[in-house]
Length: 354
Image (cartoon, rainbow, N blue to C red; front, top):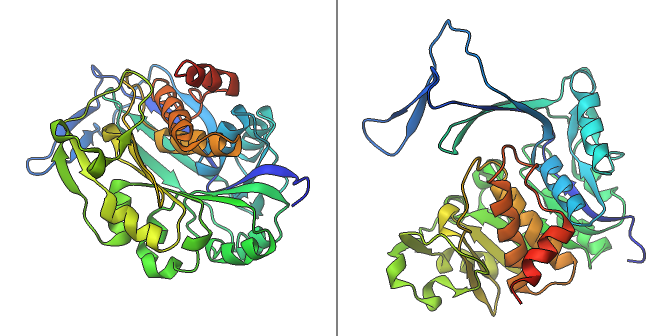
């Protein structure tokens, strides 16, 4: 492919995100379930609750990743559904501020755009209230008629058959780099549904619980003090790392994806870090030891850093480092985008490793 129009096309949701931080001394409380690990927000009904501040931005997987790629020196375009009524202008303006192309968005007639209200607890966790806008015109033809690009990034897609058309797209443009972060809709369809898609995926990003749901397998948990590079990968953590109490042996999960044809399998596990698997390598990157303000966007930012490093020609260990640095920066700020690193920032951080 000569002189592609874009560096990367980002497929996924586009939303108006309203972030509201909750105060520990406010009327909204967190209650632990009597049985099990679940916690619940307890909100008093009938009250008008004052909040100290909020953040409103264009969000969703497509917007968050496109902004991240733009900050890391790439030229992205977004692909998703946007309503022609409320929020449309705000979302366009936010994307254009980062020089993100919006010419290929699918407009849902007589609908408002998707929105999310994110309630962030003082412990760094969140509860999300959302409404998703869909449109039948966002389908396989959206990909097959897409402009030329070096890479494709797919977030969670809840409608259409876009993912199933990846093999046909790759038949036209075999050198296109493809990254995929699947979601609940894909897990419900099942592993076998994507047999023809897996061989076209260069990077699969998935967390441990999702990988278990997708494969039907279970990772075995071990104590961190029993660290073994055979079980957990060769550690390539380039900073002062948080040391978890346990690590998971993800090899059976990754092996199923690798045997299905995926080139790189990246499985994240929260504060247990991330493991990357190829046919010849298995690396572990533990999370950076930083104060956590908000975990929203951590997964997307890790994937953005990893893919951007790959497109910039960095090796596998550097790809892990870019992802780790980006995720660590994001969770120190409120919202999914403010903490995303710019290219000079991540280059300075990784050059300090050498």
